[in-house]
Length: 98
Image (cartoon, rainbow, N blue to C red; front, top):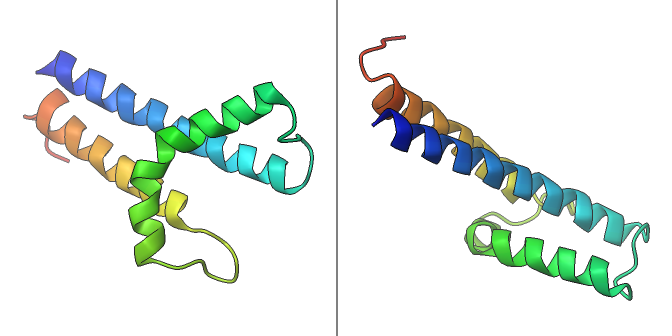
């Protein structure tokens, strides 16, 4: 169970980095630092969106933007942190009590 827990933990960690990359890419596009006319930039932004939209969209529908700021990535990252903690407690170190 240690290996399965470790793999799940790392997969969630990588996904949280993908969410952060999506946030940064959206800022760069919004402030015209990168242009969507560039095919490479367009592919990267599109791929990041395809990876994160299935998780972020339901939260965005349930919780609207606050003052124009989308807080759904923050909620998802906190959820990932909670899942990682549960994985550590249940799969990686089940006998360890905190």
